[in-house]
Length: 393
Ligand code: C2E
Ligand code: CA
Ligand code: CA
Image (cartoon, rainbow, N blue to C red):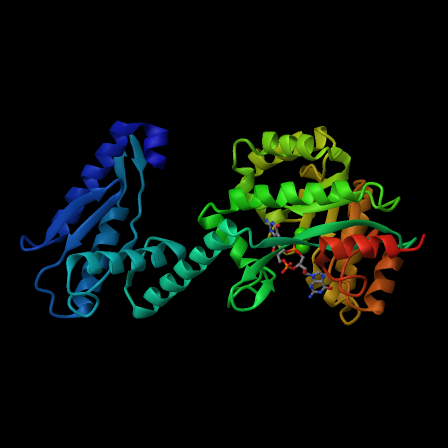
C-alpha cells in the first residue's frame, strides 16, 4: 500500500512480481504459490515431513523478501509476515487450514510483523472469545443496553461541584451493568478497544456524545457552578471525517452551549496522528468546546508536548495520584506537571483521588479540580442529578 501510494501502481505491481519470483525461487517444483489477494500470497508446501522444515522455509522466504528492490534508481523495501498451519493436525480441509494459517498470520502482525508463526489451538479460542465479545457488543448496541454514568468533579479549594465525566456502562447478560474496566476478562477499557477495531466505536461514540450532551444540558439550571461535562473520545473517532459536523449537530440538537462541553483525549491518541488530531482539537476549541488531555504521564511523550497540543486541561493519571502519599519521587513529578501546566495556563484535574491524604497533597500543590472515589463514584444520570441538587454552596 505504501509503495503504491508513494511510487504509483507500476512500482506496486513490480514489487508483487518480484516477491512472487523470490517466493518461487525458494520453493520446490512440487510446492504451489498463489497470489491470493492484494498483498497476500498462499503457499502450499507438499511433502513436508517435519514441522521444522516449514519453519526453515519460512525463514528463507523472509530473508529473501527483505532484499531491496531497485525501482527507478530507488531502493524499495518490504517485509513479510507468515502464518503456518499443518495438515492434518491443524485442519483436514483447505478452508480450515487457510483459516488457521490466517489466525497465525494475524498473531504475527499483532506482535510486530516480519516474522512467522505456527497456528496453535489457543489462537482459535482467542478468536472465538473475541467473536463472542463482538457479538455481545453488537447485540448490546442493538438492544440499547449501554448507559452513561457520571462521576462528579470538584473545585479543590471551594469544594464546589463544577462538572462531571461521562463514563460508559454496558449491560452484560450475566452480570448486569459493567464498566469498561470490568468487562468479561478484558483489561481496562478493552471493550472500547474492541469497539475501535470493529469500528463499532463510531456509532457508539456518537451515542455517547448525544446522550451525554442531553444530560449535561439538563444540569443547566440544576446547580450554579456546575458548568461542564466531559466526554471521552477514542482515537478512532478523530479519524472520522465528519467528527466536527457530528459534534456541531449534536450541540444544535440538544441546545447545549459549547462552553459546557469538554472533550477528553489521551496523549497517546494524539500521538497516533499528531497533525490531524491537533487540527481537529483546534477546530473544537475555536467553537468554544474545551479539551482535556487524559491519562497524562502514562504515554511515552514528554512534558514538552504540553506546549504543542491545543488543550485547556491536564488530567493527571490516577497511577500518579495513587502513590502520592507513599512515594516522594512521584510527588515531585506531580508537582512538576502541575507547575508546568499552570505556567501554560492549563487547568489541572487529578483523577482517582481515593484518600484524604491524597486530597490534601493535591490541594497543597495547587491542583485545580479533584475527581475520585473519595469524592464521588460514577453514578447513573438521575442519581447524579439528585447528588448535584443536594450539594450545598
Ligand atoms: P478514564 O477516562 O481514565 O476514566 C476514568 C476511570 O477511572 C473510570 O473507569 C472510573 O470509573 C475510574 N475511576 C474514577 N475514580 C476512581 C478512583 O478513585 N479509583 C479508581 N481505582 N478508579 C477510579 P471506567 O469507567 O472503567 O473506564 C475505563 C476507561 O474506559 C476510561 O478511562 C476511558 O478510557 C474508557 N471509557 C469509558 N467511557 C468511555 C466512553 O464513553 N467513550 C470512550 N471512548 N472511552 C470510554
Ligand atoms: Ca477520561
Ligand atoms: Ca483518565
